[in-house]
Every structure is written in structure tokens, then in C-alpha cells.
Image (cartoon, rainbow, N blue to C red; front, side, top):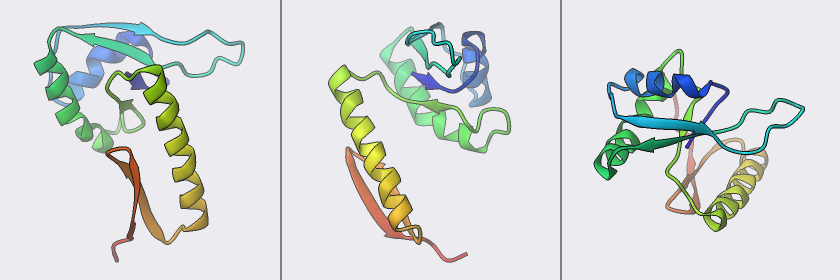
Amino acid sequence: VISSGINAEYGQEVFQEIGLKPTLQTSRVGKISKEKSKRPIKVSLSSSSAVYEVLRQVRKLRHSASFSKVYVRPDRSEEERSQDKLLVQELVKKRETEPGKLHFIRSGTIHTRDKPVE
């Protein structure tokens, strides 16, 4: 699932940015609202190896001028999505209460480290 304000047609461009050209199908998920909120794009790839390669290469998007705000996540069940939402809410609170530390989610838990000195 790609989260961003881009149109479904641009799904292919996201993958070209990281040097991949997988065969894919895209569709918007979620309900259309009057506020025109950004809805994620569901991307179906042709094989599990293509999924693995996309998830391996997706970190390159962080350094892209065009797609730095695009997030790619594997498909998750409704229960997994609700658990992730709670984790993200907890992460946001930690970042507000402890701004001098680096907080991140890995393997379903929140980790905290000292920020590196620049």
C-alpha cells in the first residue's frame, strides 16, 4: 500500500524512481470524503519476489525530491492495521515528550536511542 497524495496512475513512476519496473495494478482504497483526504493506493504486484524487491528498495524514496513523502507498506489485516495505528500514536507521544531522543518502530515495538551528534 502506498500512502501519499499521488494519483493511482503515478504508482509506476514511484517504482521507476527506485529503479524497478514491476508489472502492477493500482486502485484507491478507503471511502471518498467531502474533505478530499488523501487515500492510499493499493498496488498488486505480479509475484512475491517482486513484492520482496520493492520492499527492499523502497528506502531510496526518502532521498527522492519527487517522492520523499511517499510511504510503501506491505499488505496487512485489519487487526494488524489497528495495532500499527496504536503504535504510531504511542510513537508520536514519545516524540513529543522526549524530543532529544530518536524514536522508531521496528518489528512491532517502539525503540528509543540517543540522537547522533552532528
